[in-house]
Length: 323
Image (tube, rainbow, N blue to C red):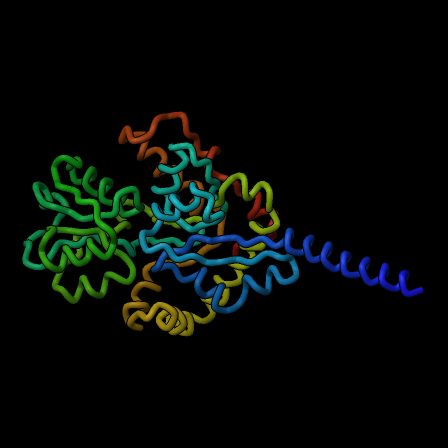
């Protein structure tokens, strides 16, 4: 009897250990790349939407903030440290042209005119043409970079007619204010500081095209974990609805989370809308514009096709319908 009891206890302990091992093996930590000026992932995380969506599944969503924006997210995704991210068309297309194989899953942020080409205070520049021979700061391989090159081309200027300096967003702003550069492409939380410095807006992206940011994923990850992708898309749509219904609360929460001035946050918030969509004008068209732009520039060859980049099936399977 005693031996049988001991055997039962051992069996019970082994069963607990075995089941714990299964539970541990089923746990999945998913890293989602965010950018400093983006609202939707921060609000989703703050409101606990990821925890709610994946409760009891073993999936843990970790939102990682990348100060160096899209290019840094691409680097982390290529290394396998981040599985999903929100980036613009330029870093996405450039990455896929270099063999990353990322898939665009849906639009997230959209800007009609929130990106501005500034001329520094006292520079006397009021048109794009007047930047000829001048120095302009912009982050390379970014939406801003494409915007600048498009504006220059429309003004009859090439990238050799101006000196384009590769700078981070913060360095671009600081260099504009100090006068180290003559112009800079700025957005979101940088606009208030640029305006306060006396810099003037010469052009915006309404003259170059809609700028979007997209939820993208590593192909190996989204194929292996489609339920995670559809869950994340549902969370983004839930957060979008909450943000649209609570704009003032959104600004307050973001300002508190990022320790950013409320007026600066408000300007950044109003510079973009949020739309989880696969509609042609929001999803395929802006990506295709960048694809064709880079081909026209000779930056990438003709082998990469739009269908290689897009995968709207996860959005469809998530059951989201745009309101």
